[in-house]
Amino acid sequence: MKLKTGIANLPLHSGKAPKWLFKRMVKLARNINEIIILEHGKDDLLKKLSDPYWFQAYACVLGFDFHSSGCTTVTMGALKEAMNPEEHGIFVTGGKGKFSRKTPEEIEKIGEEFSLNDKKIEKLRHASIITAKVDNCLLQDNYNLYHHSFVFDKKGRWITIQQGMSKNNWARRYHWLSDDVRSFVEEPHSGICCDYKHENTLDMTSKKSRETRKTSLDLIRDNPSHLRKYFLPEKQATLNLFTDAKEKILNLPSRHDIKFSERINFQTLQRAYEIQPENYENLLSVKGVGPATVRALALISELVYGAEPSWQDPVRYSFAHGGKDGIPYPVNKKRYDRSIMTLRDAIEQAKIGRKEKINALRRLNA
View 1 (cartoon, one colour):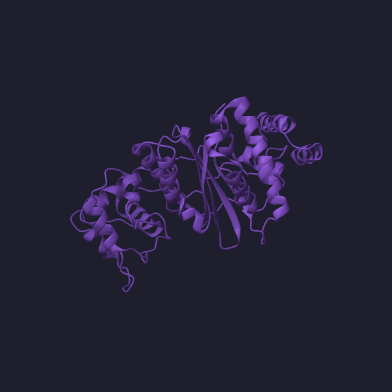
View 2 (cartoon, helix red, strand yellow):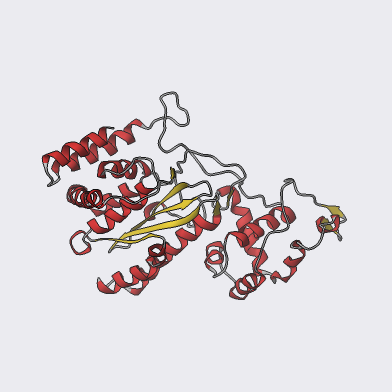
C-alpha cells in the first residue's frame, strides 16, 4: 500500500521541552530507529517518518504533547541528535528558525564528509530548497514556514518535514517523500491532512492549476514590461483594462474578488525573462520569485487568458480526529494498526529499561 504524505494542523504552545524529557526522547528515538533499520532497513524508516500518521504516533511514543506544534520541532530535534550518520547511514539536517536556513550548507558539508558526488549533493540541495519554496509560495494557505527538516541517505533518497505558522498561532506540517514526487510543482503531497479547511486558498500545485502554471510561464518568457498595465495601484481600474480592442470583446473576470493592487517586483520579472526558464519549477527557482509574484501571474492568467487556478485548500482529511461515522474522514484502521504494531514491536525490542518501555507503550495505546 502506498504511504501518504501530507499536512497536519497543530496549535502553538509556548515554552521549551524540559531537558530531562528531551534527553529521554533522544535515547528512546535512537533505540526505536535502530530496531526499525535492523528489521526493515533505512528505506522503511524514511517512509515511516514521511507518513503523518506514523510520525504523530512516533512523537507521542517519545513522550511529547500529542497535538501541539512542538511535537514536530522537538521530535525532529530529538531525531537529529539520535541518528548517528556513520552507524545508521541517515542524515538529519535543518531545524527551526535560523537552523532551517542552514540546511543547504549542512547538506554540502555532509556530502563532502561522506564523499557523495557533486551531482547527488546538488540534487539534495535543490530538493531541500524547492520543497520549502513550494509550500511557502505555491500553496498559499497563510501558513509561513518557520521549521524545515531534511532527512536523506547516501543513495539520495530524502524526506522533508516542515512546518508553517498562521497569524492565529496554528501550525501546519508538510511531509514529502522523494519516492512519491513525480513533479515538485504538481501535487507533490499525495495526501494532505488538516483539521481546518480554508476558503480561497490558492493552490498552484493542483492539477487544476496546470494551465495557469503554463500561462504564467508564457507571460514571463515574453517581455514582462507589457504586464505593467495590470498593476496600477495609484489609478482606478477602468473597463478598458478588460477590453480586447482588436476583437471588441469585454472580458470581465468570473471572480469578483480579483485585485490589481498586488505588489510585484518588476526587476524580478525582468531577471526571470532574461533567464528564460524552461519550466514552472525553474521559474519558481529564480531568486526573488515569491508568493506575490506567483499570485500576480496566476491572477493575470485567469483574468486575461481564462486559465483559472485552483482556489481550494488541498485538504483531504483531518489529521487527528477521524470518526466512526466518517466525519471528518473515515478512520483508516489498517494503516493505524500497522503504525501501532510497528512501534510496539520496536519498543518491545529496544534496549531500554522496563519502566521506560511500559510508559512508551501506555503513550502508544493512548
